[in-house]
Length: 140
Image 1: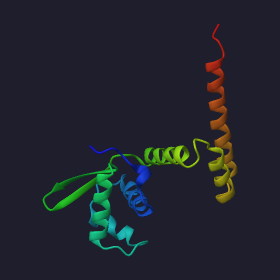
Image 2: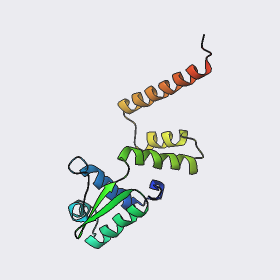
Image 3: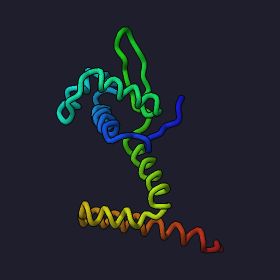
Image 4: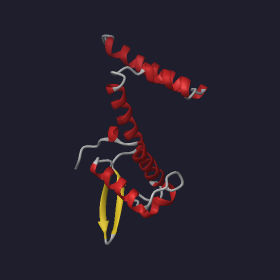
């Protein structure tokens, strides 16, 4: 199986993956024909364009495929959450040299964090601080 390369995904490939993930509650596998109508809401794509994109996602290790008869069925190899974590981690490491402060600042400025999101961020930071303290304190 190829190594999963979510950090190499193009915006169009992310859009295809988002569409596939949104259908996973209905069926664990999808076909090009099943998701083409949803893709066509935002892109003027034909069947062959979507098929090529999905085959590229197989090569990148993000989707698996199997053929039954003349139909190819695709299945994500990662959850949306795992793919997002991998992609964000790669971005932090390569673009921001491991510093997440600039990312948080960008999100706060660009998106405008809600009170709930700020509370969640504070909770996460507090949990991490407590875990770090527990590791540093000698046990009696």
